[in-house]
Amino acid sequence: MARKAIKTWEDVDKALKEITECTNEIEVIETGLSVKINDAQDKATQLATPLKEKIALLEKQIQEFTERHKNDLDGKSKKLNFGLVGFRQSARTELVGKVEEVISALKKFKMTDCIELKETVNKNILKKYSDQELEKVGAKRITEENFFFKIVKGKVQD
Image (tube, rainbow, N blue to C red; front, side, top):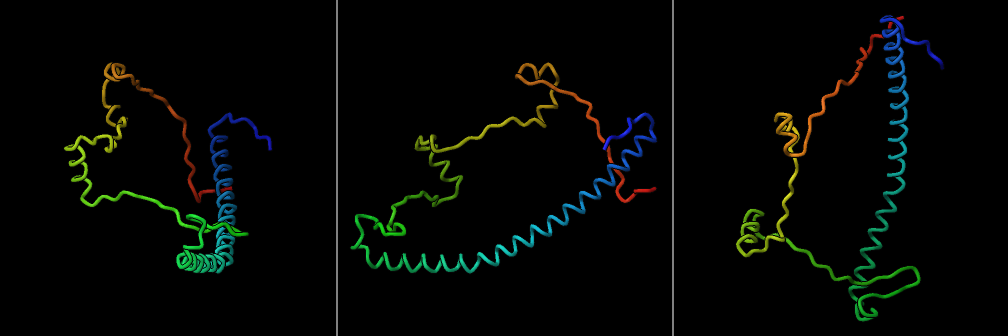
């Protein structure tokens, strides 16, 4: 779809009209796609939900049986034809007090390796400084002029 070169402001306006028309077509296509995707997701959910419920029920029954028959396990697990069941020891740490209190106690007992400090550069504040100050800290200001165009939706005329 070769297009003539743009040589006048009228040509620019015609090109913006074409962009508007293309944008409108894209929206129609994407809306149709979204409807199809939503329908497919609904269908998949409808088909998968009973299977997920069945898995959850079987998992619960297997767990209850295994808990009642821990003595039959080879150590902490039992290998079967279609899988493995058993118990895995896990540990987690929970904070009992408020975060601020725990941090204060960690500092008091010199356990600062347990404290995370996230340092970042706030570029919005940094850009307020002069070019010389930016250069001193290893930053620089980049000023660009970026082209833009804006279409007027709903204003396609023949």
